[in-house]
Length: 401
Image 1 (cartoon, rainbow, N blue to C red):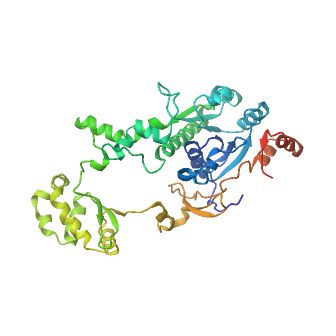
Image 2: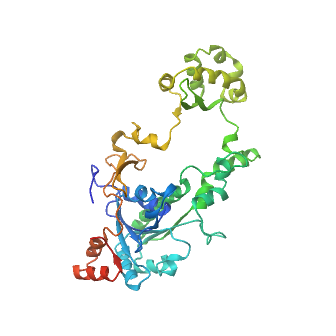
């Protein structure tokens, strides 16, 4: 597998081995973060492969986007011989991540209690729909918990709840899982023992809407959905330019207001004592917005952006995901990664949003083909070529030659 990016020094998690028994987004995103930071992630796939490989439509790119920097090891875990292979890997691993349905790993004899006896130092991360409690055995999906956790209600207008436009809860739950694994590995360095770590979709959603819960507790009023929210600022919305581009503009401080008024010839508004503070201006937004809208609409996109950037007023043009491929900022310093898609074509995909002194997380391994590393991993476990051939012939392990 090609190595297309090397850091200046060993990555922070180099030397850590993590087994991933995951699919779709939550499990793979968790281990991808750890893999990007240098961990040796072995993706354990069933004989038919991660089912996400066959996704179409909305989920068609999930596998290549969330499975870089991993090795694929395909094994039949429903067979005793297949489970024996996994147990050997467990003895040589630091952590295991799984996001199967509740009870699946226990039924396979691969739950935390069983594997911690094989490797007491193992950090075992279960990513589920719900943490321990009344709901813990329910199945869940990103969109399901967005509805039951209040996020869909807050995203769409009244009567039209909407899921967020990306798998935000799956990814966030996976990131919390990665954080828990790193914390558990740090604790293991003191205690010598691993532990069970759990992260879940529903609780991640509740964490996201905590700000709205806090608002209700503080004000005594239920917050309206975001499209109908009462803003804290008079100018905090999208505006149209003369050439019909859309730009979100946020004037959120007295310095922003002063710079804006001086630049756009609105000295009368700046001098108005009833508009001196943000709360005062928010109360008079209906008076201010038509004036501001006219000023912005009179300018072309390029002229408006130049002014806003020079004035250091927060703004952002409306973009589609496809517009980001060539974004100059995202492409700075190699932050867009060159990923090979299942079709063999290449695409630029954002890397993890981190900068670390001395490290350049990039693509060490392209998203693997199913079973691509099965033979080499079995060899690392001490199996001879003849033994590997036999395991492959019997379908206990599956690999590509």
